[in-house]
Image (cartoon, rainbow, N blue to C red; front, side, top):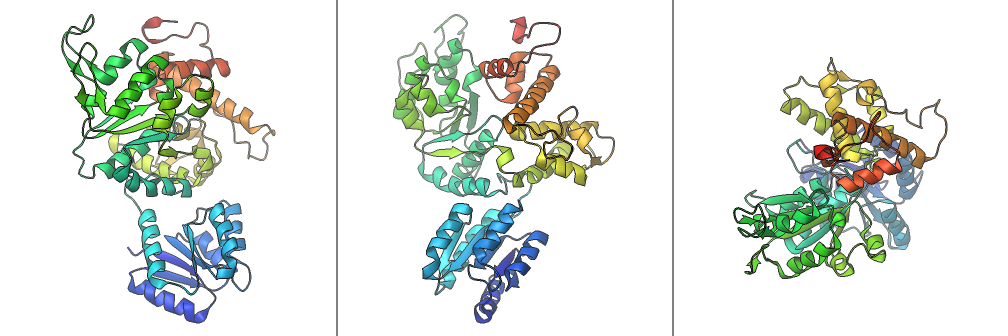
Amino acid sequence: MKQRICLIEDDAIMGEALVERLDLEGYDCDWLQRGEDAHAALRERRYAVAVSDIRLPDMSGEALFEQLLGEGLELPPFLFITAHGAIDQAVRLLKLGAEDYLTKPLDIPLLLAKVRELTERTRPRGTGDDGLGISAAMRRIEATLPRLAQHADTVLITGESGVGKEWVARALHRHFDPAGKKPFIAVNCGAIPETLLESELFGHEKGAFTGATRTRPGVFEQADGGTLFLDEIGDMPLAMQIKLLRAIQERQVVRVGGEKRLPVAIKLVCATHRDLKDMVQKGEFREDLYYRIHMMHLHVPPLRERKEDILWLAARFIAELCNSKALPPRVLDPPAERALTTYPWPGNIRELRHSLERACILGPQALLTPELLFDGLPASPDSADATPERLTDYLAKCERIYLTQMLEQNAWRITETAGHLGISRKALWDKMRRLEIARPGGEDKGEGGEA
C-alpha cells in the first residue's frame, strides 16, 4: 500500500510540481492550499508525513501546528518549508516538535530524501517488528538506534519502571545483530543478592567458594560477541561498582577464584529508573562509573507523556495475547479506548499489558470494556464528576492500587512481585513504605517467608 503525504502549499505552481514528483516517487498525496482544510484533513486521515509551507493564506503553518498539538491529535512528522527570512520561526517549530525545515528556493532532491527518511520511520509495522511506538519521542529514539548500534559500545537507558527500557535495549541489539545470531543477555542487578553478584557478572572457578562444584561463566562471558543488558544498575552496591568499571574499561573479566583475564567483546547497555547524577552527589554511585556509562544516553518518557502510543501498544498487545493464549480476537470498545488514553499509567507499559491480559482472559465477549480493564481503579480525574486533586496524589493512589493488586496476585511474596514488576526488592519495599501498603491481617512476606 502506498504511503500518503499531506502537502500544505498555497502556491499553485509549486504545489502541482510537488504532487507530480511525489506521485512519481510512489506516494499518494493530498494537496491542500489552506490551513483550515489541512486541519480538517489531519483530523480525519492518517498520513505518513506532512509537508507544510509556513506562509498560508488563512493562517501560518506555525499556528496550524500549534493548534493541532493543542488538540492532542496523533500527528505525522512535520516538515516545514520556509523563506530565509522566517528561519527563526522554523526553529521555534523544531522546539515544538517539528522534524525539520527546508528553505526556499527548494532543493527537491533534499526534500524527497527527507520524506523517504520520515516515511521509513512511520511505515506500519507488524506485531513481530521492532517498532517502539508512534509518538515523536519514541520515533526519535528509534531513529538514533542504527547509529548507536554502529558506533557506541556502551549505552545508558533511563526512565521510570515499566516504560520499556529492555524493549529499547532489544531493539538496539537487533540493529547491532540483524541476522539474530549473537547473544542478548539480560540481568537485573537489583534482583541478585550482593554476595552472589560478582559470581553472576564475572563467573567463578570450580571450588572458588562453598557450592561452586563446577566452573561457571558469568553474564559478561555469556554475552561475548553480542549485547549485555544490565538493568537497574543504580541498585548495584558500591563495592561492585569499581569492579564493574574495570570490566567496562578493559573489556576483560576475571572469574571469582581465578587469575586469568578473559577478554569479552560486548555491547553494554545499562538501564535504571533512578537519578544517577543525584546518587553521585549523595555518594551512592561512583562518579567515574557514571561518566563511563553516561556517554550515550537514551531517556524513555513515561507512557502518560506519550499518549499517542497507548492505543498503538494496546492493539499490539491484544493481538499478541490472543495469539499466545489461543483466545478469540478481542477489540476495545470506544469507551475503553477513551479510558486507556485518559488513565495516567503509573506502572507504564507493564501495567498496560497486565490490564489488557486480564481483560482478554476474563472478557466473555470480543468487545473489551473499561470495567474489564480497570477493575477497582479510581476514575480518571478528567471525568466530569471527579473531585479535583493534585496530579501527584492521583498518581500515588493509582500506584498504590496497582502494587496492591500485583502483591495479591503473587500471594504477597516480595521477591516474586518485584521480579514481575521489573524492580528490585528494595525498590518495592521503599514503594510499599511510601504508599503505606501492608498485607491485610498479617506481615508482608518475602521469598521463603522472610519478613
